[in-house]
Image (cartoon, rainbow, N blue to C red; front, side, top):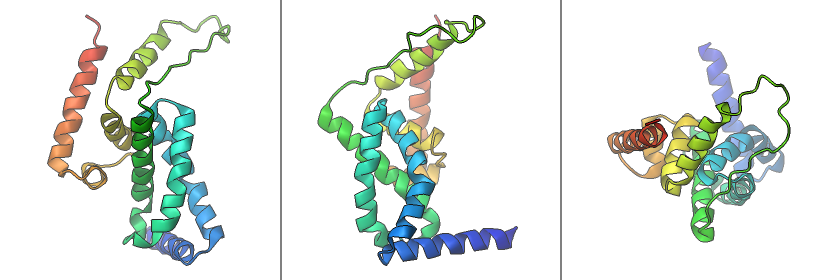
Length: 181
């Protein structure tokens, strides 16, 4: 197993090195491997798929220019997701717009679908929309991208303990907003 992990890290390092050297095919492999993860995180931050796509598209030229500054190829995924998250936050700040939650108005596929079951999703979407983009980014990086507290600290410029405390406060806030009283 250690050999397989070592080979994967070596392949990743090779792909990153080729992309840094200008190999467009290697960069395309990086895009294929990470584009969807970046979009998912940006969607949680923005609440709008079009804005999330725009943020990821804006992130790729930055990645192309700065890929040579990546010190550890094993940290490629967290770095890419952080770049995309930063772009999403900047887009939201520039647009100063609130997200709109679209609801499907079609007939349910089966009669066993309980419309009340979607209320929890709508409540969560509304609670997330009321958060600051930086707070949504923190939640997205933790729960969508799977960053641990050390990776979150690097991505946000805070200490790991400060990041954990901020995350705990955010979760408490969401729980209190979503609680049925």
